[in-house]
Image 1: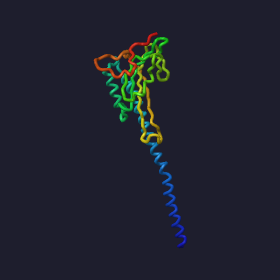
Image 2: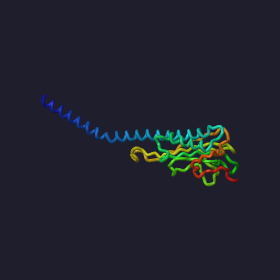
Image 3: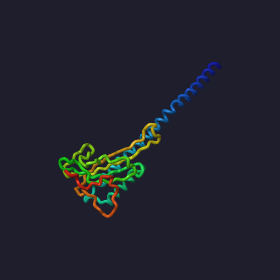
Image 4: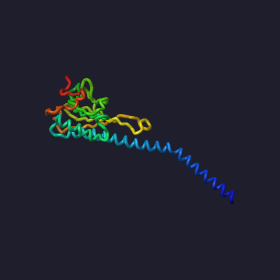
Length: 209
C-alpha cells in the first residue's frame, strides 16, 4: 500500500506542476484577449461619439427656420467640444459644417459657406475643391438646382491604450447630412460677432458658368 500511496502522491505532484505550466502558457493569450476587448470597446465608443457629433451638428444647424448667424454657428461648434468628450476636440479632433447647394448645369453641387473648429488641422474637409464645382456629397448625391443641404464632418485622432498591440492609431471620420427647412442658409447672417474659421472655403457666391 505504501508503494501505491507514493505513486498517487507523485501523480498529484505532477498534475499540480502541469497546471502551473498550463496557466503560465495561457497568461499571454489571456492578456492579449483583455487588451483586444478593452481597445475594441474604446474604439467602438470613440466611433459612436464622432458619429453622434456629426449628426448633432448637422441637425442643430439645419433645424432653424430662419437660417443661422455667425454667433449661432460659433455656439454650435462650441457644443461640438462637449459632444466629443472625453475626446479632446482642441487637440485631437476637427469638425466642419458646410452648406452645399445644387447649381446650374455645368456647376453641380457647390459650397455656399463652411465653418470649422478643432486642432486636428491635418484633416481637411473632403468637400472642398479648388474650383468649387461638382462638390462630391456622401453617396454621390447630386442636388437639384437651388436645393440645399447642411453637411457635418467630424474627425477624431484615436490612440489605443497599447498602440500597435492590437489596433493602430487611426483617424475616425463620420459624416452627416441634413436638409434645412428653407433656403435661408445661403449666407451666415452677420451679427457683429467674429466668424469661426472659414477653413479656406468661405465662398458666398456660386462659381461662374
